[in-house]
Image (tube, rainbow, N blue to C red):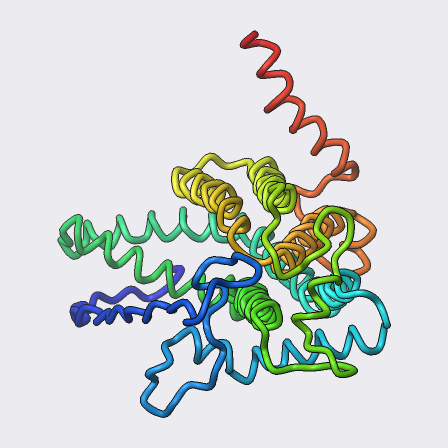
Amino acid sequence: MLCRLSVRWLRPRPPLQVRVLEPSLARAPAGGASRSALPVWAVASVSAVGPSGAGGWYEALATSAPVQGAEDVLLLAHTASGLPWWGSILLTTVALRGAVTLPLAAYQHYILAKVENLQPEIKNIAQRLNQEVAVRAHQLGWSKRVARLTYLKTMRRLVSELYVRDNCHPFKATVLVWIQLPMWVFMSVALRNFSAGAAHSEAGFSVQEQLTTGGVLWFHDLTALDSTWILPVSVGVINLLIVEIFALQKLGKARFQKYVTYFVRAVSVLMIPIAATVPSSIVLYWLCSSFMGLSQSLLLRSPRFRQLCRIPLTKLDSDTPYKDLLAAFYSKFISRQSRTS
């Protein structure tokens, strides 16, 4: 026998209690319009929040320790490098992406590769367990529902034991998200604080004043919106490109995967109008972060880099990943358009 089966009554769990917090709306400061014509929420007060929380959740976030730490990192990069603010933002983004998210992304691929290599063993166990459950169900007179629950419960336990044995539980692959997303939020809020006139100064000038002349090319004022929409559209295009690269490497056509892909595509498109309503300093950070994410995704396809990171080989790996990616892109987009026309 593969394992000893037992049936237990499943105790119903109480439903989750979800409490929705309604954020307080930011109000425009009295005494005239904003100098950079930013939206109301983009120039909200960054004053400290009282113990009662009357300042709202966003003010609490804007004055939190992680956001202040992000501000200190930006100021340190600007002071140490001597670069203009656009260069300091790019330098900080590249440094954080290279030092934090790239190792975590490599670890994510390491875990996913080990999980992928377990699939043949999991499939074999599932077949043997299904036969054993069928035999026991016939011997003990189990109903289809009881047999199904027994199979699922036992299979879940056996798969979990495999993950523990190889130290590759899929939840470990989500560490990148839990680190990267908060870092992205804290950096964005820190740049928004600078653009809105936070109480930081260097050499007698506020950071906001420095940002007004710290841009380059067509966005000289980093506290203003990008009226050309070049930066917002670039953010959306790069994010869509990242989504399509991940979609091309997914060989399976599960319905859930399709829904997730559609959702991320919609979010990428939605980021374009959102990026058009925030200061250029934030959009520049988003653009650089997305570009680094795209570069990181392509780098992790390299066989040499994967070998350097000791990522296990899988049956899905290719010796020519970039050539295969171009062929898949051509087949999906260019060749399809040629056939339809």
